[in-house]
Image (tube, rainbow, N blue to C red):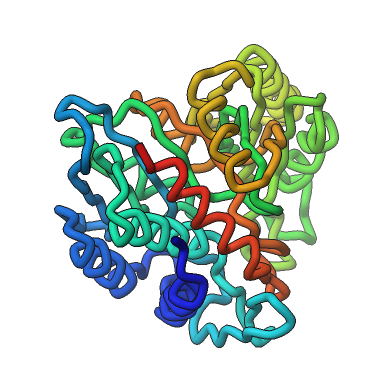
Amino acid sequence: MINEQRLIQTFLDLVQIDSPSGDEGAIAQEVAARLRALGAETNVDSLFNVSAKISGHGVKKNTKPLFLNAHTDNVSPARGIKPVVAGGRISSDGTTVLGADDLAGVAAILEGVTSLIEDDKKHPPLEIAITSQEELGLVGAKAMDIGKFRAKEGVVFDSGGPVGTIVLSAPTHNLLEAVIKGKAAHSAHPLGGINALNIAARALTLARVGELDRESTANFGIIRGGAARNIVPDTVELVGEVRSRSDKKLQRHTRAIRAAFEKAVQGTGAKLDFRVTRAYNRYQFRKSDPLVRRVAGALKKIGRPAVYRAAMGGSDANIWNAKGIKTVVVSVGYEAIHTTDEFIPITELVKAAELVEILAAA
């Protein structure tokens, strides 16, 4: 049985260990130690990903393992988190994020597995990946060696809103970087230069960004360039992205944005370097998929009807699916993530741990 007070304390302990993206060393060792205390064979790699394997109990030797995943890193401001327990929920003191994204997922996995073992319940082998640097672009999952894992399906505990949501699909994500190289000149004699900033402005005017269709978005979020107010800017760099749940649409929109930049540069004497890098690939499941039905059945057992949605953001599940482990993402209960108003209702944290236990029970 899930021990609510122990679960709350585990969560409080975890969020008070500083773990901003790229600095997960201390929390990785803490999580690994807690998993070892449960009898797990654990490893912490150079990026502070934690992998763990727990033998099956009361099941046949060839029973397929279940894969469980959450991540330890937090977005800023994430140092010195002071959790506040009041009114049936846990929040920060308002000066930092809470870190429920995704330490609530980590705590739920730890408590669910602890309860399973404590109650001597039958369970398949469990293979657990607690990743680092998820918020920086799924860095930990991309680098993690899962060659020793045998699991072919699992669940990622990393989505907001009340427990009950199953994410059926997520997009493919292209990273864009455009560098426009013009020619510097004194601002008093601008005709002697090629203004890269003006060209960049025209390119952004020609390119479609924002919501492109129901499955696709594009954005440019960073612009760098210029040396001084009295110098015609010779170099401007723009950093952006395109994402879509349709690969055909992703390719079409990416080509269109490139074409807009090429048109803006044409005839100006400037040069364009336009680079596209694949961040991660899409995945998609139907409600009838056996894994989805398994998760929906577990939700029903904890009194939550399954709610299905399509995401426009990526998660470690994009990487696991590409690496051959079928995974869907489920909600953990946190709200207002990536803000200092972040919180999680205690009832949702408990339901998340119950879902882990039910899923992992044989």
